[in-house]
Length: 492
Image 1 (tube, one colour):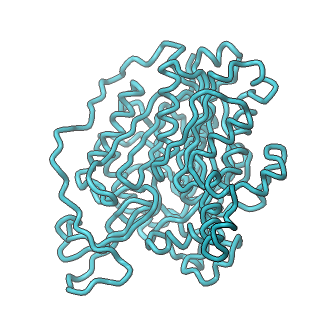
Image 2 (cartoon, helix red, strand yellow):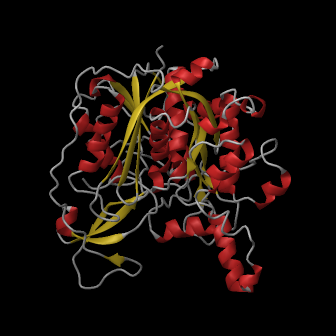
Image 3 (cartoon, rainbow, N blue to C red):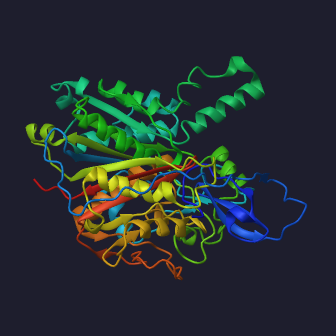
């Protein structure tokens, strides 16, 4: 298998034997896992700006995708059944859930030219940049001016999710907040705070570094700040597994509830890397689309003319709660989390396993954890980052698990909002749940010439009505991190 998407792109030279072509192959990291880019003739000289590496062959591991028993019995214990009772986000389409999903249903692209900083000299000058963001009512003015956008997005999305779940400050004060935890991860952390600190050190010396440099750079601060503001004293930390981050958080949070360590978890991902260091770094990796003249057409999963992923940003947060807790407090139940899985390719830092075992086994294990048979799944929110080999690699892994895909619909949210990196799984979980509650699937836009190997319905260009039975949402990341989560409409 050539590659699946993750976070922190990288370009390397692979030997033709590993890439499956003769000579040397220029490999392209798929938003952000390494994938085959294009063949180049074998030669003694190497292009400048590339790292030469020889990825080891896949070790033979005695493992296989876990078989899933047909129509298994689902969890019945209300202490272990996990439901979604609230959702909150910050996105390129604003902070309102319905507006966000309606824009997706309309097939509107949120990709535009960057104006947050002067990108005129950058080879890539567009992204899914958030504009007109307001934290009014959620963060006080003094802290708002100090915070990195990564944490501003997290605080607003998290507090909006709590409000959506009827867990505002007045309600929380009456609850046992030691039973409510926070787990919001990020792939990059406070990148602006970090960059500004380094700049101050170099230009003015260490005495000019702000005391907020370290606290606002480290990746756990989103969860910490949200807990500090709300008094939530349950399990609290962050996970950083590149673009698989948010799904890893969902999986871990669910297990805290299942083990009885928490009744409610505030969980998701946040990211704010559309800034000079972030964009410049990804340009250096040669992973981004360079369609500067047509930014809204740049993110085009599964289309033959795709040329890389588009950076995005934001935050997506869910309120996960035991059915017992939700029932006791009369909460509105939006959907049910059935299960999930995380696996590692255990192969190479950037090169995915050629046999695809890590990804296909992750999908199978997620269904096993959810007590769902493959035949019950009829919707997939794909990782689909719009990179050359990564999109096809994900499809091939899906086909390994789902032998009959005739009833499955699969779409790519990133075609409209770009790649949210550590926030992607949170935003896409919300899109997946809205597909279930509305009965409409958003399109994958820019599907002008779909690859012939993509035989699954990608909901090209126009929304489709579809009653979702069971849905999965995929995210895969740098380092070989794979994560899949499973949702369904709530059935009492």
